[in-house]
Structures are given as C-alpha cells and as structure tokens.
Length: 296
Ligand SMILES: Nc1ncnc2c1ncn2[C@@H]1O[C@H](COP(=O)(O)OP(=O)(O)OP(=O)(O)O)[C@@H](O)[C@H]1O
Ligand SMILES: [Mg+2]
Image (cartoon, rainbow, N blue to C red):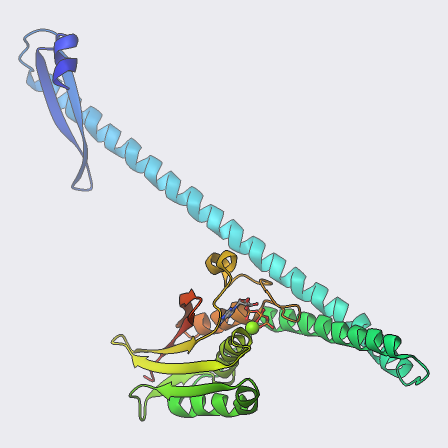
C-alpha cells in the first residue's frame, strides 16, 4: 500500500466509509497526486458515491440470494416430479409383476423338473420377490403418510422391537443389551414408523455380524427435549466407499438388499423432527444415532 502511494506519487487522500443499514461494509478512498485540501462539496460527492456504492453492493447480494433460492426451489420441484414419476413407474411395474408371479407359481406345480431346473426356478422366485419388494418400498417412500404420533414409553418401543428380532438374534449368535437410564421416558412418535427405522438398523447390524457379536442399544437423554438412541454393533463396518453417501437410495452391498433401508429410516426420523446419523464405523463396528423428540 505504501509502495503504491510512492509509485503513483500520491499526496492527499480522502476516505469515507461505505455504510449500509448502519453497518460499515467497506471504505471508499480518493487520492490526489498533489497537496490538496478537500472542500465540503468534494466530501459530499464522495459520501454520495459511497452511498450509491453501498446500494449497488447490497443489490448484488440480494440478487445472489434470489438466484440461489430460485435454484433450490427448482431442485426440490425436480425432485418432487422425479419422486412422483418413480412411484408411478413402481406401480406400473407391480401389476405385470404380480401376474408373472402368479403364473410362475402355477408353473412350479409341475413336478417333472430336474434338480437344476428346480434351482433355477427357486432363483427366479427369489428375484421376483425382490423386484416386488423394491417396487413396494418405492411406493411406500412416495406416500407421504401422515404420521400418527402419540406420547409413548420409549422402553416399551425398544423392548417390542427387540422381541420381534429375538429369534434372528439367537440364530446369528448376537447378544442384545439395552442400556441407559430412562425408566419412564415418553417420546412423541408414530410407533410403527419408529420401529421400522429401528428394525432397519438392527437387521443391518445383524448382516454386518455374520459370525455373531454384540448389539447395544443405548439411550442418552439430551437437553433440548430430545433423546438419542445409539445402535452399536461389533460388525465389520461400512465399506469405505459407502460412508459419505450411506443414506443415498439404492446404495447396497447385498445381493438381496434394496438399499432403501437407511434412506427411509432417515426420512422417518426427519419427519419426527429428529434425525438419523452415522456416528462412527470401522473394522470394530458401527454406531448409528437416532434422535427422537421427548413427549411435550
Ligand atoms: N451396521 C452396519 N454395518 C456395516 N454395514 C452397514 C451397516 N448398516 C448399513 N450398512 C451398509 O450400508 C448398505 C445400505 O444399507 P441399507 O439398510 O440402506 O440397505 P440394505 O440393507 O442393503 O437393503 P435394505 O433396503 O433391504 O435394507 C448395506 O448394504 C451395508 O453395506
Ligand atoms: Mg437395510
């Protein structure tokens, strides 16, 4: 700055702040290459220029805001259209699929087929079910079902979910522990939806622990009328390349997975003013955190 003044041989300078809505947002500086005493008129002109400059800057900022909100509006509009389209396609696929399924089952009554053929048939049956499952989940996803929320004891919700997977846990040699101090804590939720999210997490954890392990559900009450439910497993961890986009739809490492479990679970929690986050995942295991609203 000093070298610039020397280089340009500047002698006098008049500075005025650029102020917008009582906030200084910059300085406007006028230099003269000789000794000069600025008079009142000159000061007024510079002030006016600074005010005009402030308005121009502010306008540019506002336009920027308009453009970016317009863009995000467009994006959500596109997503809605895409969602509707996906649901329509899923619906259209499901009808012929049902016919194929029914006809297929009647074909299978033929007992003359050899072993290889039987194997092929069972694979076809499995894939048909898989297709139907995908179509069904897309339809569920599209439905913005009004959540039916009530004040319910968190303990009962967790215990019920544990009961539903009891057999699967035993088969997979996985032990389940529910920990945390929350004797009569009530949460304001749609029980069916929260259990669906919880089951998604538990089943994912089971898949990640094919040789057994420990599943821990830990309840931690936070201060902002929310409660965290941590679901921890001692499984192999989430593949590195999945970590950043684990909640994206159709992301799956399983041949029989739809890759919608986590997407739907997150959506459910968000609709509850809560959230579902991946806290940690590595070769020692994975931790997901569900955040739920405490009863009003
Ligand atoms: N606890 C976990 N440990 C390790 N990997 C996990 C865990 N949870 C999720 N993943 C990985 O994230 C992928 C996506 O999970 P998500 O539940 O969304 O779909 P999915 O289980 O593959 O299929 P589905 O829609 O039938 O649930 C899984 O395929 C798995 O690779
Ligand atoms: Mg899953």
